[in-house]
Image 1: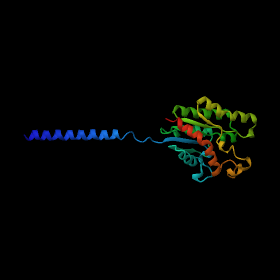
Image 2: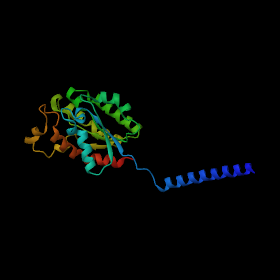
Image 3: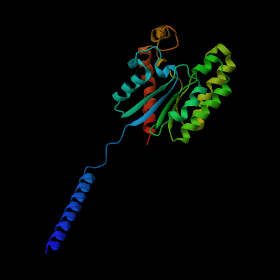
Image 4: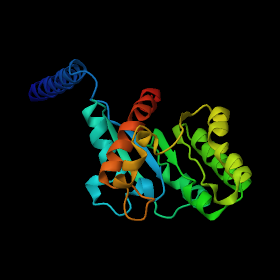
Length: 226
């Protein structure tokens, strides 16, 4: 008799546990899917991306984050700018920089190649290799082009400037003609007020205009993400 009572108690306990687990499962189902994590972008570039000479909140990435938030974009932007970096240096660090969570990349490298007079063929090969790494990892790209200075002659300039639009078309990336697109409407006489004393790196106000110029392209990049 005691055995039957004990067995009955065990069965009742087991049934109670099962009902509890089923109820908990139903509650989880009715709660719906978890909130999706924000998209992750990496801003991959040189000192212009890194924010050279500026306090942190005036740099390109912090200002871009704020601009995107103002547009209602739920996105995380990683600052992967390295002052003085070249396309060769960028290629050397890109694979491990594109971690599993990175879905999109703003690629803005090549200015230091142009200032050093790097062979355009070498720069092209480096940029192509970086785009291939991104493609292999399923990372969408906004490729930011540039215009080389005329120091090394018109032929060098033309060959160098052609790299970015041609590779963008080859790989099907989004494309922005220049990091400085947002300054295009500025009176040339006032451009000096938007740069630091070196005449190369923008100040906080210059960065604000740059972000306003590139921002819509970044929103297009976000729309391409899964």
